[in-house]
Length: 278
Image (cartoon, rainbow, N blue to C red):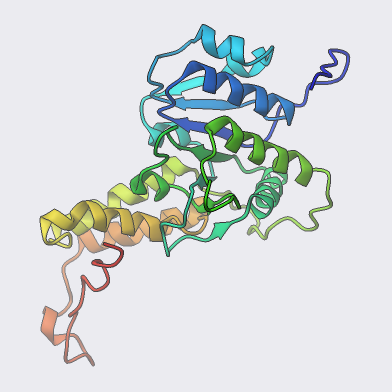
């Protein structure tokens, strides 16, 4: 379908599209074209296999040069989303009981609402062959899954981006009503601030031998991050949590572990619930 009109104002806003370890330049170019069709312009690549820039990507983008020229490349997913406030991860199936799973329609409406509230958002798309890892999904706030034929559920990356881009633009044509509540004077936290909370909490827990046995530590960290990232924190809330952790590190217990006032069992069960989802 043709219909490019250079006399019309170019729409270029909305969530960042983040491709994790994309392989083919042609796929990246088709993603850029899909984004441009529906008003998205911010493309971020995490460790693209064939490097960047890519002439194959530019050719496949079919004149979506404004997307290709502004594309940013990052070494890690954490770096790619550190400045964002809210992130969706696209997956073929629900993999976390901790995270809400949304349809593209609900996800796009949520993204529009947050955009109007001044938040920076993003959508994660995984590798062409096997998508996102559990650890990468854990860094997102919510999951978006496409309703597809279960007997033929495979979508290529450009198709997936096209679907989300379309829903994004369609949702912008509707009256979304009130923006979400945000306390006066408080700003939503960025992913960089959330990652700082992750590291601070994990260091404090590691010092107390929480991640035991050691072989289960990676899975326990994935679960911990999935729970903490389930909702969006404000900067002030992140600060409160880190202050609590710092206080626990700074001061000793007021009573021995088994002699806590009013609790004959002390602090038993500190590791409860970390063997879930194995």
